[in-house]
Image (cartoon, rainbow, N blue to C red; front, side, top):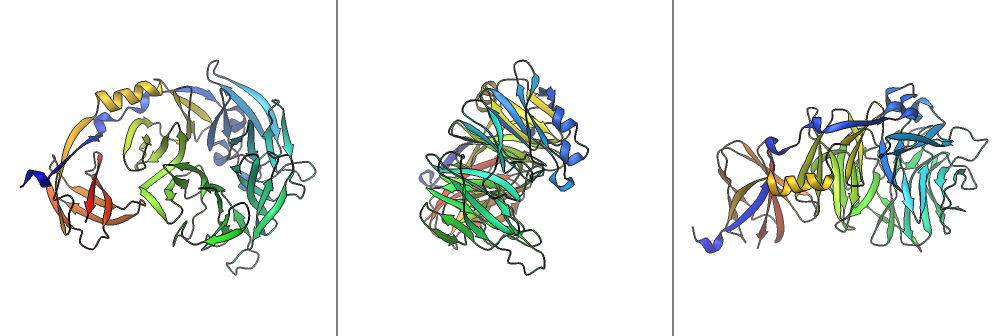
Length: 436
């Protein structure tokens, strides 16, 4: 073959031998509030949130009408829990921090006789429960569009609702609603997430007895419009806890505590991210970290900087449900009220993975750029699944090969840059090619 048509891609290929043992985690503490719950769902640590050097955990079971929920801070230095506030809600599944304030939306208020739309820790260090002015039924997420302008989303009676505050959450006004479209008697709609991308707020309602609505409601600060591309043809998707990474919105498909597909949206099209299932994810310092459900009880902590190339940092304990990073440490929230800590600093794990343990492999693609047929050679002989991923993260085709090589007819692909994902069951490699 002509060497000028050959491009060698040196990739980090993570085999099972390069994945850290789950024994590297140790018990940091058992959350007293979650432990006191009387259902398995209630005991689950559904979210871990770092704030001012402490960890805050979400838990509860609003399907079983638990609550009120005791908020504790966890000090990783002393390994101790400190009671902070009794929140007037049946569960907390979400924390958000904006402008020096920590917010916990009330998934389902416990008592209507006292404030309970959300709990807030203000800039003076004072906790409190607050109302919008007209009581919500459920509140699921908080987002900041700009400055002190905050938005909370959920439902009020039978309608999905959006509330806006222009003063960091001190006063609120309901600015948008949507109604159930299923046609089922007694159905009601909810907004489960509030995502911000490129200066716009995205919400998309789901009917309780039906599917997600076929459009997202989009607010640019002045007017509402509708977008039909965020979830595409998806149906039973909630959308959960979005964040922004590499210029795209990333969010889970379903509510916390259970693994669901990771999804991305670039403002023009939504797609599934590399067919990855995750329990939780976290954006920090230009990286996205995900608690990935790899099947058969194997849960991995992985990270990416571009949403295409992923590095495995650790194998998490069985029963992992949430995680976060604080003070150079990985913390895992478990299904049984435990909080686990990785025994090594995150920085040392990354150094080991990226410089000491990886196996460099040579993937040969030719011709590249190509017009019709792309040839692929890899340095192993086993069943290999090859996926083509376009620039929006959508998988265009899927192929299975045996041996150490294969070829794909790409003539039907539009011209552009694509990523090949090669998976042989022991690890995953990625490389790029151009279709002319």
